[in-house]
Length: 382
Length: 178
Image 1: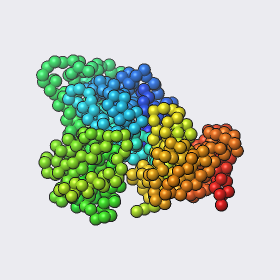
Image 2: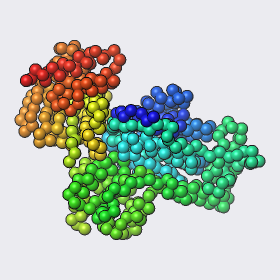
Image 3: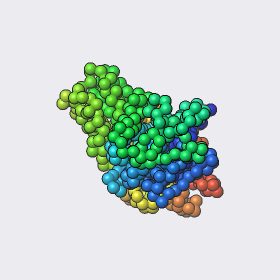
Image 4: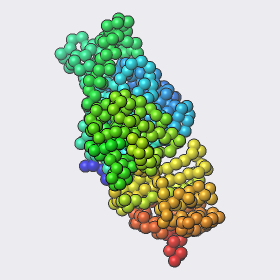
């Protein structure tokens, strides 16, 4: 049975989704506007036999999440801008050591302490490249409270399936928004757990061996009887460090390809009215809701406007732009920053369209009127 | 355009406006409608300008914020002056009696919301619930029944009676207008 419709905050939906997906460990250091996630995880996890721990800082909480996951629990942490910066080093460790985990970043205005209580989407590039070195990562961005629930479940599933950290990139608007939601029956959810080796068929288990040829080594949890070495150094299939060029190249290639070879499984986006559009707005998170309103207003006036709403930001859904019809002349990238995702959109469009940014970075959600005005301006100039 | 009602509750931090917004949104859901509630506040825990916003609609709510409210509640002078010019043409402004009125083109209803909470109920902190009563009775955006149920769902245990009295005191302020 799905639950009764009720008023629920985005941050609350995140905790509900995480627990439904199987989260049984949370470590964090509270920070506005993500704090409700820590508060509710502290309240709800003990009731399902899980553990909540408030650590001394964000660096330690990311470390605790990695440790818990290696020991077999689905683990999550939540933070915002300054805390997300602190977590980057250990996120890189989780990428290289292939430890499944979910990191929530409820974006506020930055840089530095910035605007603690106000929304922004300034961490788009940090979510992709915040930690150093070539690394894979998956980043999802919800626009609705119900979608926060769905994408949190999905973040755990993708993280477990591909053994990769998954970032839920929210913003203050959707994090704090209370909205009428009806949660699905937990038994109707598809839950993915990390792949395990059949140890009866493997005589000498190597923790980083690609036994199945899909680039994803099956994982034995710590405490299950197989001791192995986990290091942030480049390692061979045994888990021990190696400086060999072929080992280095193989590992980085495998890490990247396990994500990019499965891009159709990972990437999600919605298209609205793009079939005959002359101008297409691209947006994600809360501003996508202003964009959909603007599209409805403009369509009612006969303007050929469409929207691509991204639910996965990284890996970037290039396919969405290849599919656009020949009627499209203009692309407007609407984001709450000075212009971040627009550069990736430009690369994906390969010079085919006139690409314009609609950027709002004053701590307010852009209004539908602002989107409407931008569409009119762009269509007039085209 | 579909029926969409925008409500802005404004005052200072600590007046319980966010709770009032949550109660109105939950009451709307109990009435079978769609509702979203959002807020804007500064880094301080008390004081400072605070506002809560509610959008109620019988359809899906895409843009979740309030731009030109049909209903503005202002409990402080600062909030009134900040928001009085961003109203729907036919919007009404509900003002606490402590505020010195100025001219606006919108209809103003001025009522002793804070004083009723302090004198009649004995706790100024229930002014937010008195305001919920005023809004419910004056605008009928939510039903009395749903508002009462939403209040009982959300207020701290042991304060139910106090808050229900505050709600009906708010309703009476409007009834006594006519």
